[in-house]
Length: 272
Image (cartoon, rainbow, N blue to C red; front, side):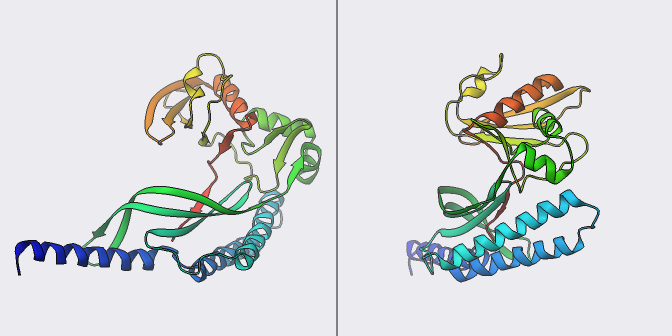
């Protein structure tokens, strides 16, 4: 056997092993997808049963999430999907404040990794991402959302303005809040937003954020400030800068209220 033939055989063996690992580790069939959704439903059922009775907000959130996941499972089961995907394609689903969505993704670059005992496939790049199904949760008006939480509507508006309810949506009739909005936490928590269009109208001095991209807002080492990490549409870091807390609140209020901006900080993506 020539050296060229040996290399071709090695390459073929490597490709076959990659395909094997990919089918083992990723959801490449409808059956595997449904089994994984079942796993997440059972996990959420356990979280509901363990949630303290006095934690009304946490229980409402988990019950809304569980209801949405069950609806998503039924929708996936009843929808005509590929029983087995073509090579390189896999199913993925994501859960966030607005519901659950099913996506198809295609891997363009991967490699085999190992620790001396086990092998696994490391996906380095996806080149396609298609949304197939989406089950949205209910949107509640400020009055209804406030009533369920036992606070005044004005309190909900303050929470939105201060970036406490980042998944709120601004409509012609006022603010709407998804029933799966993440439970409130004390103090500041990191945030992530993404958008795929030119925004326009960014607060003064932040015009660079007009172009498609995203930001991650984090605590700063400097007291009274926040670190802003800006990435472009390809998720490549572009710049980092600091804002005061009032400036950050103004930026977040603009992002929350913009219809083209998506809050992604609470997204749970499941692909294995």
